[in-house]
Image 1 (cartoon, rainbow, N blue to C red):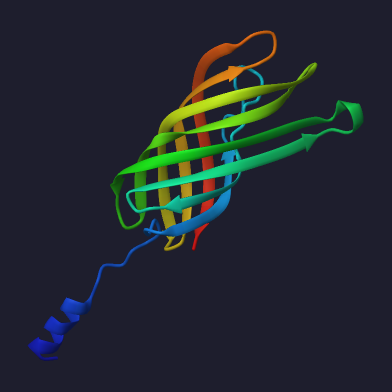
Image 2 (image 1 turned 135 degrees about the horizontal axis):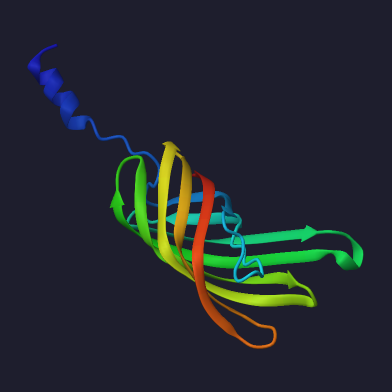
Length: 166
């Protein structure tokens, strides 16, 4: 090859981008690794969708479960939104800081409690292929639960997820 062809190839070559591409939409699932808040089960897992804007990603999730039968059945429903600003990114991963906010309707002995949660923290996404990401979310849980009063407390949050980006 002559020098002009090599120079031409270098000029038109561009770096490969793996996932997290600006303007992409990711759909997937997340599961709460620690699925309890003060013993009432404030789970924040479910089906989720993310919009990746390059410098940040934002999205939401919804989850539902019903365990048992008849009068003994317990239903758990949650819905939430998230925002993570990418502090550092590579071609195959990113590290974001931000958090989640949501509502969890959880079963308790005499019915249900509504839990409002705010989870400040971080999220790490690792793209195992150009459009599939595994994620881990960690941070704190700040929540209030109804019942016979309001409890404001904290705990450690952890979620694992997988998303397919279009």
